[in-house]
Length: 351
Image (cartoon, rainbow, N blue to C red; front, side):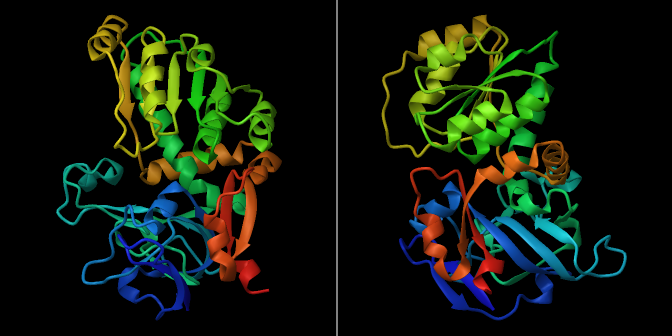
């Protein structure tokens, strides 16, 4: 079978090559791949900045945003041939830690988790993959055309869950939400905010192309100016860029009892002049909370599926701005000016 591989730590080592079919030890469910999403993490792995191969191997199969079709599934698994499924990215650690032991592997405490296409576990960017039945999420026909968005939606579903848990510490009636970044994660975070009946604002640097239109179509407000103007004492900020200056600015301008949820990873290496004493004073006096959130467990995938079912299908389809055949996979990693989400389309590669 064809698979997209990379040598982690070696820049520009990604190759489309022939591999053996996945071993049954990888999971009882055999899946034919339909679509693979490409995100910033994949780009960083291809650049050699991140990633780890399975133990004893030098190469890693890429791809953690998946949509596939079941070819084989064991009796009693709840799956059968033809079902559309998405693979859960993170697998619990083998010890397991106290979090992994109760199904909260997204909150692994000892760092021994593995992640498909990222950390010590082959990804889904191959013509076929295997996965344990309990880590395959079945999706219904309504959201199948955009099923590849389930994984990024699960990330923001978890972020919103964390925000709401923290908010319940006191009497809390949030109204204004700021999302920084109008990429796929930011737009999906905005979608879930609108679904909660909140006044959603999105801040990004672009002034044309699809992003302002996608935000407007949600009924949200788009900003391309300053953080201060966009924030205006927001009750909630979802920071989806990882840009260090934005991270500190939203901490400064969040409103009283505000919650800043950080979902973007900063690259590091850039020094900023920050008055930490003043920032600490503001956070303490206003009872503000800063929380990081990443990855998702099965509960969040199910919440994501519910959110996608409740969304406008044409809006969701508009997030996928380019479909690239597998044979031309490199084009999916070359960002275009008006990209939102580029995907590798395995069905197109067979045409």
